[in-house]
Amino acid sequence: MVSKSREEGKEYVLKMTKEHEVKFIRMWFTDVLGFLKSFAITVEELEGALEDGMGFDGSSIEGFARIDESDMVAMPDPNTFQLLPQRPRDQHAVARMFCDILRPGGEPFEGDPRYVLKRNLKRAADLGYTLYAGPELEYFYFRDSKGTEALDEGGYFDMTPLDAATDLRRETVLALEEIGIGIEYSHHEVATSQHEIDMRYTDALTMADNVMTYRLVVKEVAIQNGVYATFMPKPVFGINGSGMHVHQSLFKGDKNAFFDKNDRYYLSKVAKCYIAGLLKHAPEITAVTNQWINSYKRLVPGYEAPIYLSWARRSRADLIRVPEYKPGKENATRIEFRSPDPACNPYLAFSVMLAAGLEGIEKEYEVPDPVEENVYEMTEEERGKRGIDTLPPNLLEAIRLTEKSEVVRRALGDHVFQAFIKNKKIEWEQYRMQVTDYEVKRYLPIL
Image: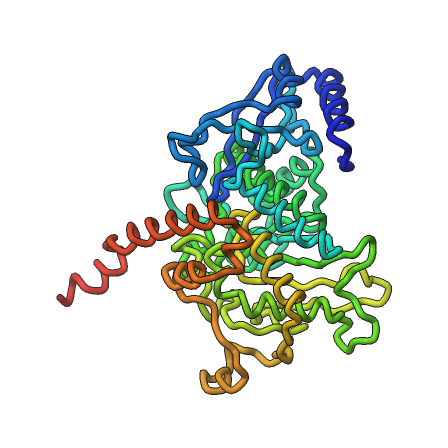
């Protein structure tokens, strides 16, 4: 849907609900960790909700508010109105809208991840830029949520026999397109039972909403077909994990600010400073782009996941890849940030990536030379000579770096920054006390 003024948006929503005989509207928003929250209103409440929002108790939402300040208002964004895929014909149509979370007085709630991204996009807009993003979310299909029994034995781009996985992917693409999310590619990924569906490039706020919708649709279609889809970054030891490579570029009006026809890499100074900002601040934003204990089981050498702070045009071992320029495709000039995983909060992940890139632009960071050799095959000494550092090896190290980061604190705002850090420290402590299967198998027979 093309962005409309709020009044036009309200009229459009009321007209669509009448035309399609919508009975229920789901109000969607996310908590600090990126879990989708939802409550439904009836069409009779819709006009009032569009005008004044709907009150709810925020005290039980992760990272929202304490009990003594729990009253929140969910204000639906009419630009996100979408009919959901049809249920059986005898049931009423259902629609959804993403909400902005407000305090009772009407001011934005600083703990709302969508508001965090809007604030960072405004910072970019004040500099004349619009951020566009195209994340590639990988995921696995398993027989159920209790184990990791695969549905197929396929590999990258394999045309596997017409089995459950092929049909599931097709059904998911159709469901996504039915709710207005453009799809470019869908294919089998490198690992057994691993898949990827790529959404069409769009502005970052729309894309963050789309990521939330995409994850839900992938899971719902799987459940309807009696299987389980997971965005867990590394569910199976010894094979590739699931990443969320984020293609991104800044536009000034309708011109790609990353393109320069006179540069040997076709990259503008803005693009190079943005790359330099991402490389410099990558370690401190990693707790946000890779927020789970399990995220760091994926970020290890040998499984196509980037851990070294380098950039290149061709090599997929580097943290940042610059896809080759094709003549006449100036607007497709972009960079691909390869470390995030699909279990992150997209509003916060886009926020910290943008903040790191803008830091590079504003402070005119110098970009290092690209590393076209395979970084994994270099010795530690060779990497040291080239000044190639690494991402943090586990969540604890990542939290420590984030905690000291002014860039992340500014990007997230104090409320989300503190709630996020506190939550992640609790998660690490709970993990630290666990006795794992590995320890039992490794030590019980010998100690």
